Length: 177
Image (cartoon, rainbow, N blue to C red):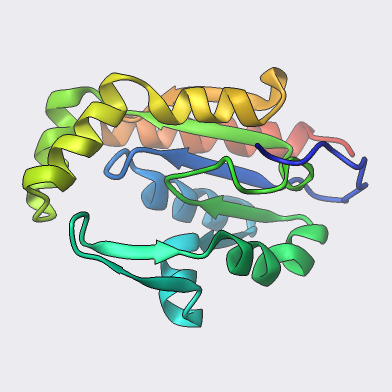
């Protein structure tokens, strides 16, 4: 469970964009960072670049991230605000870091096509589709953060992504510490 808020006063908000792999997190976060001049932090890339993992999981074909190392790496960066964090999990980040948590959701057939195009198959494919069906990431976000900062957004089409970026850009423009 994420830590309770300590009331940190930032001049710019921090956002977490989460969701099952293939829901458009990186595309949305990258476009939003460009529109707002915020920093886009892709946790998956950070884990690889800084070696913030405990090895490789052969079953799921991914690194086993070391959550403590990731949080230590990001702590000072997050304090300043103006960050968009992109990751498919959210329950290990301190609650105080985020002013908005966005859970992207995608229709199962669209997600299946996206993941198979990435080369997902077997256990990795079925596990991710099941996570989306059962809304695992949305529940994780709701369990880890205040209800009023968690938002679920559809991310099936380019138009959805554009609308999401526009709405989040507007939210950032009206945010006050």
